[in-house]
Image (tube, rainbow, N blue to C red; front, side, top):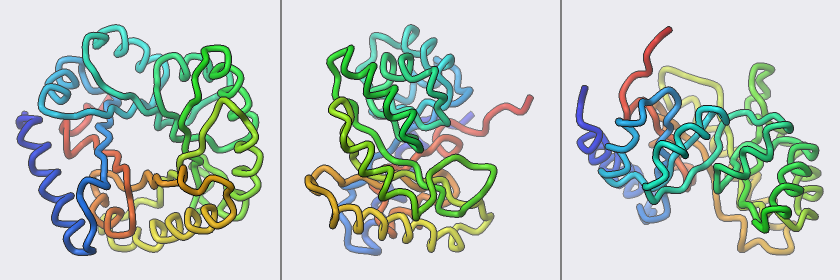
Length: 232
């Protein structure tokens, strides 16, 4: 297995190169280390190498990792599909929720956030590819969802998130990333607090450089960082 520190260095260099191509400051882009099925020891190695944000896909797995890695200073983003009945657990173990795609989920997150005296940063997940197999509000529906969710005192909408169709070549994903950026710009034009809408979570191991060129501020990287996941 390659060193996670070496992988992280290589990824950061690729982030810098992508930013340079479009005259962006690399400091604008944060790396979310996706830890789905990654052993705790590898996660610890990654945090020690400099990872500051962990991306969690499953609540049960996330809760176990929180207990096992409680000594580490790290932020956790929930990046998987979230059922409304898991909202309480998500608020307990994650600082950000990136996958809010319906008002009913937002309402539950708000309820528990207020009970725990937290104002939770969230992203609205948009299904830019209109794929039946993926979660997310439609591009057309994002404005109504934003309006509804903005009324919840326990939540703070910070931007948008997407998982575009997968392509072996990352270039065909570019229009989907561009669409999300355009949607965020439109939301900012309608928002009462546009200064809070700064985040675009898009791009993974196979296409994060194109995503950065199109405006990503959060890139969710697992395989390129921790290595290939085991196949069961």
